[in-house]
Image (cartoon, rainbow, N blue to C red; front, side, top):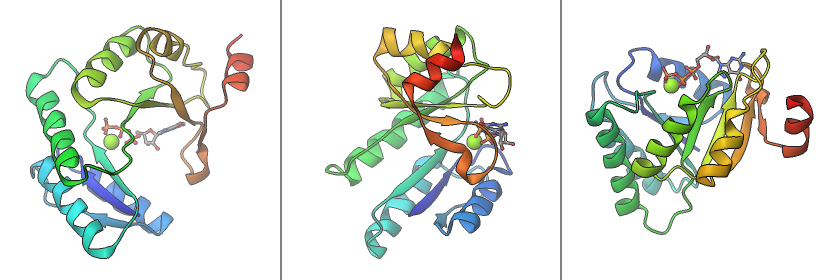
Amino acid sequence: MILCAGDTFRAAAADQLEIWAGRSGAQIVRQHEGADPAAVVYDGISAAKARGTDVILCDTAGRLHNKANLMNELGKISKIIDRELPDADKEVLLVLDGTTGQNGLLQAKQFKEIAGVTAIALTKLDGTAKGGIVISVADALQIPVKYIGVGEQMDDLMPFDAESFVDALI
Ligand SMILES: Nc1nc2c(ncn2[C@@H]2O[C@H](COP(=O)(O)OP(=O)(O)OP(=O)(O)O)[C@@H](O)[C@H]2O)c(=O)[nH]1
Ligand SMILES: [Mg+2]
């Protein structure tokens, strides 16, 4: 697996990802801070093709969905992936913090439009948050939840199970 450090906006993001690459035994492709994220993703795809790697995981910057230029940048990344890997299986995960309220629905709507979000990873369910917003998101936008986060260790990202989620919610 290759991790692609597409969050070039936050200085520590690539360093953070490098630590996770070390922990998990994945390779990492990164550039300098402020680099064009689409160029980093392009590099990651080229490296994967050259090395025969099956899986590429691209991190992108957390961004405000009302900042047009940042959202356009995300659209550019999608276009490059589609152009370079037309036949690959693609999953576009929107990471939603479990504490997010109604704003999560708006975020999901806009990220679906610009980046074709296919699934949600719902994090921080180990705290008091229950992540009820994903019910509206799944209902209104037909985006399923695939993963949940329940902590900061490697095994704390787990597949979503609807029945236990509902049990915890009510
Ligand atoms: N308790 C808990 N902490 C989490 C969970 N998921 C992520 N974190 C922690 O939350 C902090 C922020 O996580 P990041 O992965 O940097 O968040 P991000 O969404 O990538 O943030 P930006 O890219 O800056 O928008 C880190 O310290 C993570 O370890 C979770 O499910 N539970
Ligand atoms: Mg991040």
